[in-house]
Amino acid sequence: MLLTVNQSELLLNVPAGALIKTTLVDFPGRVASTFFLKGCNLRCPYCYNTGLVLGGKAAEGDTLSTVEELFAHLEHRKNMLTGLVISGGEPLMNPLTPYIIERAKKLGYRIKIDTNGTLPDELQDLLQSDVSKPDFIAMDIKTDPARYAREICMHDSVLSKADIPSLLRRSADLIKTYPADCREWRTVLVPPLVTENDITAMAALLPEDASWQFAQFRNENCINPSYNDVPPYIDAELRKLVDYARTLIPGAVLR
Image (cartoon, rainbow, N blue to C red; front, side):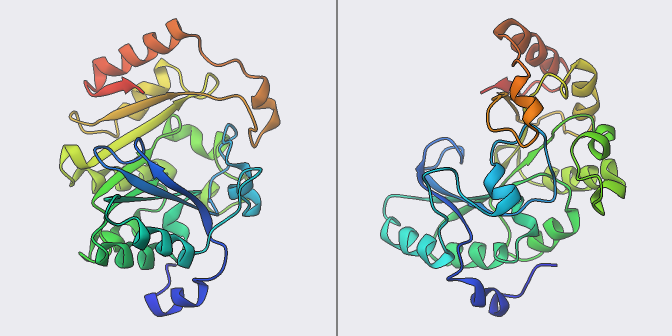
């Protein structure tokens, strides 16, 4: 359950996430900062943010920033930056997320949230108030929703026993209420998890006017070490999969 703003203030000086001070690619059309909050309710076997997901650590050579450090940066760069991306991990399970959104909005920032779509109740809570409503939402779709419990979740978690296809559908339906240029869906093309059959199942969640962003799989530092030995799709295979996705969702692209 997300905490209130007053409760969140107790956590402002605790290392909370990895800060990317400037990005031109994470928030379409904006120069932004990205804050990768630690903690996630999934265990995608190909995820390379292993430290953040498993142990609350930044990548090697980096350190985690506190929320106060995040806002010191946003204050200092507010004449240059116009957007803040809150990512993870999974930001909708983090009690700091509503606080960060509200405070950043007061500084004039537009907010983008990256979510895995498994927490529709928490997403709906954010959307019910203008002070916590993101301006842009990106939702990851990992594979066929029917495969999540077996391939994506922690096997001993509550989520692994939930009706995950229903959760993803509810989140997608909430995101569909946004204008087409304020939402997107994203899929990493991992060979064991994304085939034409999986793309067909994933496309059923999306509106026809969806922006569906595909990315190449990186077989390094994976949570499941066996995925470090999985060869990525070659260029011809990538093009074939994205071309197939485009027959279902015209806005499918390889980024």
